[in-house]
Image 1 (cartoon, helix red, strand yellow):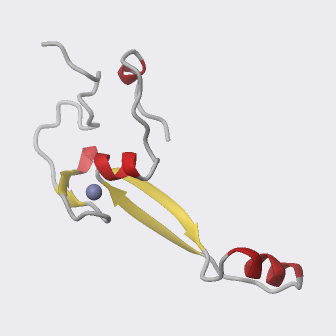
Image 2 (cartoon, helix red, strand yellow; image 1 turned 45 degrees about the vertical axis):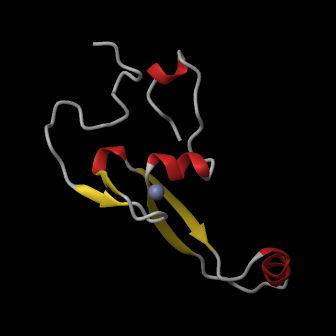
Length: 94
Ligand SMILES: [Zn+2]
C-alpha cells in the first residue's frame, strides 16, 4: 500500500491501540503518538520591561509550560511545516 509518510504520521510503530490526548488549543481528541508536544519557558513579565528589570539585577522566575497540539494546530502555529513529497519520508525533528 502506498503511504504518504514512512511512519504514517504517527510514532506508535506496531504497538496497536493507545490512549487519546486532548489538544490544548482546539480540544480535539488525538491519539497519543500523533500529538506534537512543545515545552516553553513562559515569563510573567514581557518584553522591554523584563529586559529593564534584568538589567537592574532583578530575578524574574520563569515557569515551564508543556502543551500538546494536534497536527492541524501545530501547522497553524508554525511548530510544524508542510513538507515536500520527498521530505515527508524522513522523521520529524522539531
Ligand atoms: Zn488542535
